[in-house]
Length: 265
Image (cartoon, rainbow, N blue to C red):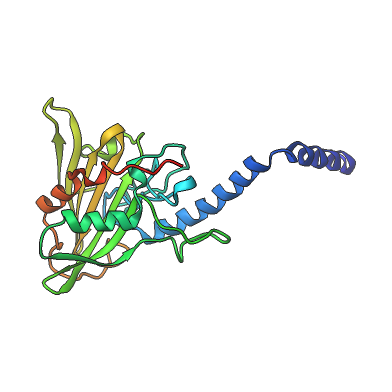
C-alpha cells in the first residue's frame, strides 16, 4: 500500500468515528477498567482453587453503579494462588451490585458473635486506572477478621452476576487439589453450591459458593492468613481460619446478600 493510500485510509477511519463519541468513550473507559482489574487480580488473591475476588468479584465493574469485580467473572484454578477473574462489563444490574459498605454492615449483622471485621477494603483507591475516579466497590469486599482481640485471618466476599458456569459451584469443578469438596443440593436434589477446604503450606482457605436468585453467585472465603494474597508463602495470623466451615456456610446462605435492590436511576 502506498503512503498516499495509507493516509487516505487513516482519514477515512477517523471520519467514520467522528460521530461515535459515546462508543469510543466506552472503549476508552473499558480499557481503563480492564487495567484496574489486572491490578485487583494481584490484590484480591485466594488460595488453591478459589473463586474470587473478585470479585469478583470479583473482580469488578460498575456502569452507573460503580466498580463490581464480580460480573461474569471466572474463577482461577492456579495451584499456588487462585484469584477471582475480573468480569467484562455487562448491562445486568441487581443484588450483585451491593455497595461494599452495605456488604460490611450486613456481614457484621450475620457473622457469628465474637468476630469483628477491620481494615475493610471499600473503594478502588490505589487500584483505579489513570483518570478513573475513586469509587466505592460493589459486589466485592475484603477485610481482616479479629477473634479474641487479635487479627486471626481474612475474609473475602464476592457477589457474581448471573451467567456463571456450573464448574464454579460444583465438585470438583474448577478446584485444584482441595482437601475436601462437598456439593450443596436443594430439596429437588439439584446442586446449588459447594463447600470446600484447601490447604497450601500453612495457609488454609475455607470457601462456600452458592447460587442466588437469577443464577448469580454468592462467594465467601476465609483464611488464617490476613495477607492480600492467600497461598504458598503467605504469612499466617493463626493456626486455623477464624471462622469454621459451618460459620462460613451460615454467612453465605443468608438472604442478606440477595435481598438488596439497587435504586432506580
